[in-house]
Length: 379
Image (cartoon, rainbow, N blue to C red; front, top):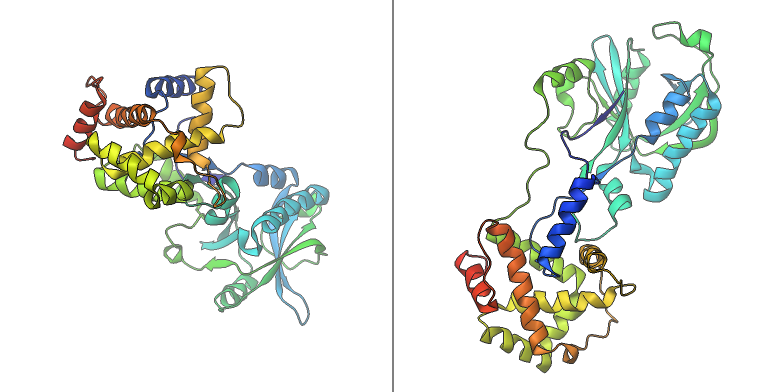
């Protein structure tokens, strides 16, 4: 079986949602507040479960290489396809290191449950990059299989796994279909396939259900059945931090991570001081000027100038969510006219007000928008 951590998530690519997002972009007109939370999800695919199912994954074998390390063998009726599953696991480790694979065993009555998933942080880095800007919610898939009986060797593995350093090999092997139909644990001879064997740093073995950490992916059949009665989680996905302090923290973090050179030039040059003085004359806080300049500067990262307005705004949104300004960037603040800065400040304020007070008409005057942002405690 396979499970996902997190329920009730909506399809992020539905036509209705795409149309709504484009409509919001048009209304915002290029305005953007880097502190306003956006819910982003990254979900692991089901490829491992597909390959294990194709390989006829039926059970596990455990053993010890003479004068060597223990090994766990995934047994299937089609060795070629089981090798394909192992190759996928190997790919995870090649991309992220040996601890990319998370393997858990939890004792369940007379049997046990095996769960194979990806380490969440390493999956996040592979899926969304190593940066300090994007913090997507992770939907982690896990292949879970229950074994009806438990061989005594698992007690030895549990003791071994508790050691500070407890590496082991992960391999695959073939189990003839007629043998796979025989139920129960038993001592059998099999030849592990060492081609593509993976050396894992360890395995988590829990003798009791309560020994599992809160983030464990290993779930019993009884827990799955009980979850069916609960229904979807109405609090998923969690809302972002929209209070003033949270928005301020997020804005400062994201601007510093994405546009550090622009901020440095703004804060240390006479031209930057002049732009700050212009914003002060409008009643702006320093962050409003900094954000507006960063938004204007992000236009320079467009790969090309699209003909359609919607396309241009969509491209700008993508840039602002993923740009990383190099230290060698040439930051020329003299090309920013006073009128363009004031206009961008007004667009950014309207972006925030449109989300804070969706039913209230936004003032046309930039000074009025700035004043309203301040009255709401976000200035």
